[in-house]
Image 1: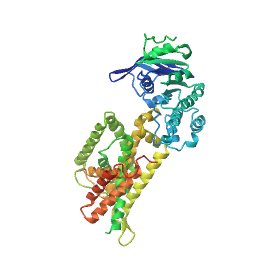
Image 2: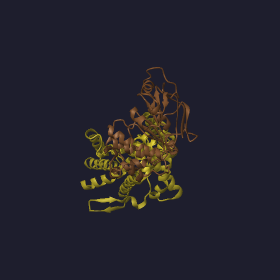
Image 3: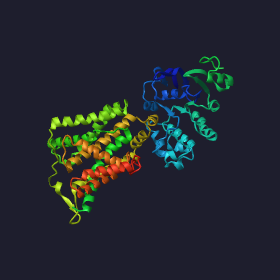
Image 4: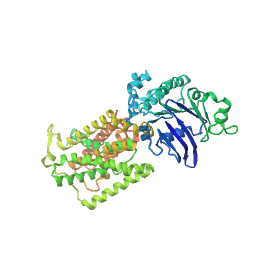
Length: 240
Length: 289
């Protein structure tokens, strides 16, 4: 289980996250929603180790990983699908996937398993990754993350720049992953999409949690208020 | 001397330049470091070989078995302990640090080994050659250096394209942060890239000592030729360093044929022409595919 406790992150003088806490259990999907600049990506990048926490802790299965560098967190099983996909342009599709194995974690994910998940990918494995469409590149980015056999999969803005049908297709693979016991933490600007797929959600505003709960329990008004900070803030943990 | 001979000798000289250039290109392409001490490290390797020869009586041409692995370890250490730290400050710091290393190496060599110039004693091999026609003969030593360069480039290409570490090196060169997200320990990978670059620079230093002479201040001139080869061939392209080295070598040999003192100048002019007309270099830049 991933457990983030009172995480505070600063970018220079700017406080990007203030005492954010969350937990994700195996087989669970937690969606982080919030407006631009609310700190969603910073939260994922901090859990991955790309930003250092100035206070608070990050634990995985009870083990404190707050001080570990990024590649060591991957070895522990925390794997990010970064915003903008970030494939390696000079590598082929298959080489991109293989780099995902660098941490040496063992598990059921390997090349054949990824090619089975995305059936078109095997035929195009020798193509440079940059020749693929945006949606196909997103699939390769997910495949690269799966190759590390994650315990916790972090998804940063999967839908960004993709056509709606492609977004649905990409998200359709998630239930299968969660069904195998993977924990998924996703950041999504498309709130409706995020709430459709998540077991629980957490709304960030200016680096603080303003609402959390189950999608079924939250009214649109409550979410809007928490999202934009229009009316008085709902305190953390006050799920409707 | 005739024109054919000048061109052939120039091509062989290009092998030496390529050997100097490939490590520079690799370090720049992967770690984004312009190593201004590159030539000095080569000279240092040549001095190290002299020590090995005098203490163990290993034949000069076999010293690479000892010197290249030592330099690989040395390169890993230099990368992790010095260059990586300066990289995390700023690119300018890295430039200053390698410039500082260059000055330090030259002066340490000057103090410990004096300003005398040296070359390896290769016995009768130094003048032995393959006579192709009455006007054209190919020296064994330049031929061996050229073949070494080709073998090194083929080996590097295979390593980068076929092995997991090579893949990680290319991934880290493309996008360091994305590589770390994928589980690559980028500092270790950069260390390995530097180790390879230093092993090739050691070979370049040995080739220098086998084909001509060296002294503590011989490094910077070698660095300039290596730079020129890299830029003519295309930054970041391994085979480009061989193409660039050969073009530079041929330009120098043909230039010297026209005017005995014009060789180096002709090389510089060709370099400037490439820089003006095709600044991206002749070979499209990408690491080994």
